[in-house]
Image (cartoon, rainbow, N blue to C red; front, side, top):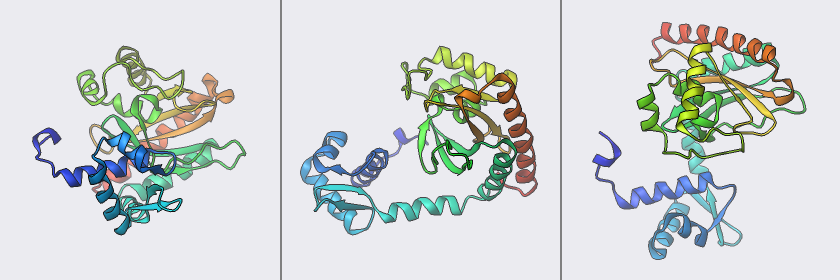
Length: 258
């Protein structure tokens, strides 16, 4: 049953939308900013905020002038990670990949048009990539997302993603379905996805799906400083990731994790 076929409870929908808006924001927002983002009537918005503050889902700052995500949201989000049976094995694989490649490695899951970062193991060099655990990025702008979108048909991809132009994170982000389709075909042909500064300037990224589900929902990637993204280095890193994800998928299937 799709969300369009479900009769939504308005107050619950609005509370969850507030959490999503605050989660996407770079910091606390004023009530005026929340009103502009959500379009909810001010009276209803104030009532929802007071309830969510009292329950610990959001917290007020700056003497009540601003609101941000609260501790309850963190606890529930952490529970998702703690209860995922595939993730402990995935994290160990990230550590092995980091040790062998020397680069920051990420584990993410496809969620509609986005990927959610579930784990990161950072390199120890000074120019390491920033941890993205718990963050959500457009699938078309990441090697993780491209690796997973390549598991789908062209029709399935078009249904998951918004219409053109696709959101751009940098000037290098692919923003059309036609251009993305070409990249996905390249991904299928070579067995891994690669993007160059499409979501973060200064970084390229290699991504490979973890095939313990069909189609794959999870992928692993390595972030590589752009000045080190030679063809030979990208191929080396891709081979390492592919070897480890095959071992990971075999382990997950053998333990009945689907």
